[in-house]
Image 1 (cartoon, helix red, strand yellow):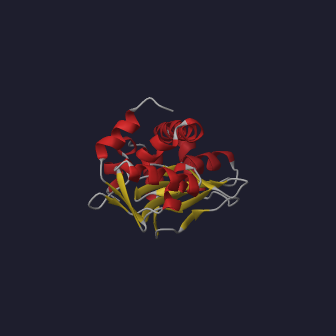
Image 2 (spheres, one colour; image 1 turned 90 degrees about the horizontal axis):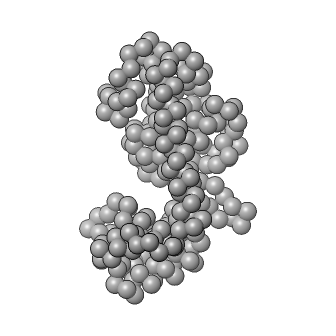
Length: 221
């Protein structure tokens, strides 16, 4: 498990016995794209750290629309998992592997014992928790108050591309943005009319990166 030094250097720099037991208790979890990581109402039994890939944490609104609260990428922990472990509450949202995912899981008992015994582990866990909470608040503010066009530009620019093509459906983009598919389709067509993107079946091709970047950096809301 050489990834500890590479992905979690602050934890690797600690040398106390409790942290070593914490790391030795970890086991690897491999998930396929689209596979559930946890469900609404399920108990939280493991502390999770993503080694490779990306997990989306989602909620369902009363109208049946899904919203991505946040994503957990390589080298990150899941804020909701940490919160549920500390509170003993079940998951209030669902986690889904957005790509193929490799993660390490530490059992609840080992996690809580490590927190009790190691100041270094407490520092690592709560620093990660604080950073992720800040990201979730920023995400919620963006969904509630940000303009559709700027949010769309941000998602498109952040997505990995192959020859400027993003493998993403209108529904998938709407899910990431926390918007309705119809709204997203309308704004995508406007982007296409401006010459910024080209739309295809199951993909969006970026034609003008500078236009999207200018839109993203604008002060319009």
